[in-house]
Length: 313
Image 1 (cartoon, rainbow, N blue to C red):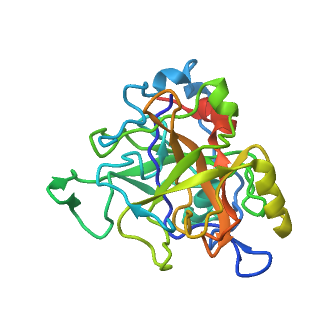
Image 2: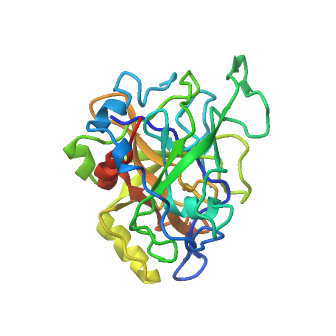
């Protein structure tokens, strides 16, 4: 299983206007193409022969201390300790490709190195996070050394296929009760599963039903939607859904939203208590949480080989 931490890109998300008979999709506010082509891939010479050796094992990943999110409830201070970006090992993070395009400070420059990742956050409005008598340690702000977007991702393409990227940190994160990795769906069964019939969880600091972003990490349960049913819904707005994507939600008032992009769609493994990342928030209806319009997520299982090929110490 692969260890991750999630970083959510505040204010970014694609949408479809659901106030119309055919809703509009929420998309990043600033969707510009890469001016200089795709980011530089990791050096071939630095890749390891066994990338699985870099990943935390199941005794570490996906374990938490307790056993625009729309319609969500407040997450406990030590819940989902992998939130910030989706991390694989201590120096690799998974995110959405659309967020990477937005984060580039100068789109005429191929450098992405200015970006930082914050780990261990719960309440963005406080310097020290406490809930009752439980206080977390200091957050970890770590510069991003390298950004690796999926090579087939096109920020100008409204379909938003291959909306996934890895951020490599400048140095290792320090795992503790509030900063931990999540697991990846590594087995063939999990890689290929569409998880129909399961409920998953989304968490983040995105917009809520009040249309304001939340200071405190929120979470919401969303049901997985049959991919063919999801495809028929989005066909109305000329979007195609394929098996590299997964849909969840479609329940009034319960959804991810703007500000949650790049965050995880996650669930617990059927035979264990470990949490694993199933999808990466990509786009959905506007307003968020529109009945009958599920959110669309990049299906992580479809990209496991790509992820492993990019990992290095």
